[in-house]
Image 1: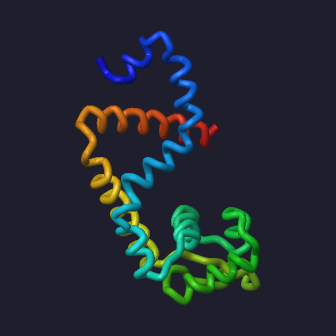
Image 2: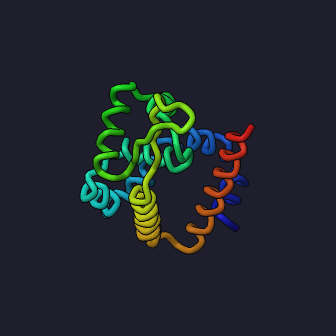
Length: 164
């Protein structure tokens, strides 16, 4: 009998489940810290590239939207126009983003993501997965499978909620 089945059949499982549900955000934060950050490979990679977490978020947004304007970026990322402009300037100088004039409206400046940024983000993603793989390796195969099932189910619900 699996651990979740045992918990569900226990008379006080409802109160334990509610307590655990309330702890979920803290548990997720602790889980990420335990399985990822101690090795520091992702942060080392970002530091060597002189890239910050907000810049990674900006490039990830750009990866999905391909081309955008500074004002659209500021709105989407909930940043001030001046902060966005400074971040874009740094990423352009570093070769991660490129600026060009809009073909339809020459007054409008658009921003695109470069091949360098795509490569950087792909490597960053690979390193993150590697860190998590190392981090969860001490777990038993049964716990790993149960965790994978729960996370897949949660992601399915979250993705479905985003499309409605």
